[in-house]
Structures are given as structure tokens and as C-alpha cells.
Amino acid sequence: MNRFQFRLQKYMNLKQQQEDLQRLAVAGAQAAYEEEKRKLEAVNKGIAGLLENNAALRQKGLDVELLLSAESYYAFLISRRQEQAVAVESAELRLAEARDKLLAFQRDRKLLQRLRDKRWQGYYQDFLATEQKNLDEIGTARSGKQGRRLRRSI
Image (cartoon, rainbow, N blue to C red; front, side, top):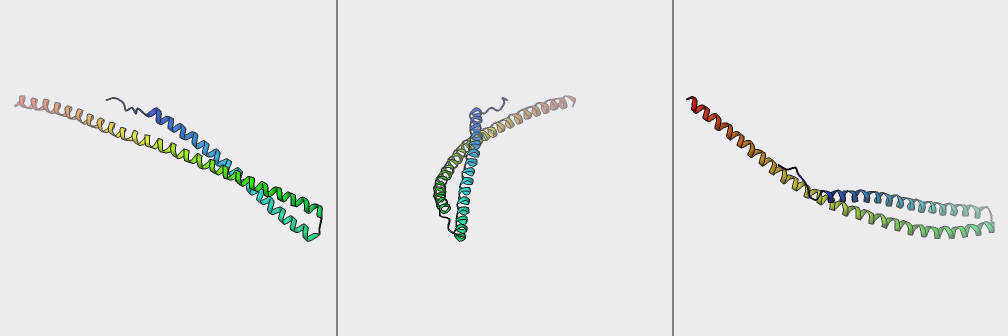
């Protein structure tokens, strides 16, 4: 009997490679998302630290120049937080898109894998049937020869 050969094996291998590449893309998008999130947390910590510092400065006494520079820095941090929030959202969308693509590649590969498994089961059943047929023929031939020997000796 011929060897099992899945005609779509090359296509299945291509889908597996695409899935592996997409896994890398998801990992990259996840790292970018985490980095943007870390930057946003750093900006939020900076704002909290500045507010604490301003409260301490106001209790000690009024240094107008320092308070004005702190307020302009506060305005800068607020705008930076808004920009960073947009960057985090963008990175999150890219991550979601990468995950969706990965799921599509996984579905395609799993579909091909199920098809290959079904074809393999069919091939294997045919192989077993052929083996059984061959064994039956051998058994029939052997019993036929033994029967002839017994008849001759009697």
C-alpha cells in the first residue's frame, strides 16, 4: 500500500508558519502595550508627586516663582498624560488586532489539522482492511494445504 500523503500538507505548513509569525507579532504588540502603560503610570506618579510637592511648598510659605513653574509643569504633565492615554489606547487596539489575526490563523490551521486527521483515519482503516484481507488469504491458503495433506494420509 502507498504511504499516507496529505495533499494540503504544504499549505498546512504555511499556515503553521504564519501562525508562528503572528504569535511573535502578538508578543511584540503586548510588549509595546505594556511599555506605553508603564509610561502612563510614570506620568501619573509624576503628577501625584508634583501635587504633594506643591502642597508642601504652600504650607512652608509662598515662593511665587517656584509655584508658577510648578503649575506650568503640572499643565505639561496633564497634556502628556492625555497623549500617553491615547498611545495606550492605540497600543491596546493594535494588540487586539494582532490577537484576532492569530485566532484566524489558528482556526485555519486547526481546520486543516482536522481534515488531515480524517484523511489519516480513512487511510489507516483502508490499511487495516488490506492487512486483514492479506492475513485471511494466507490463512485460507494454509488451511487449504493442510486439508489436502490430511486427505492424502487417510
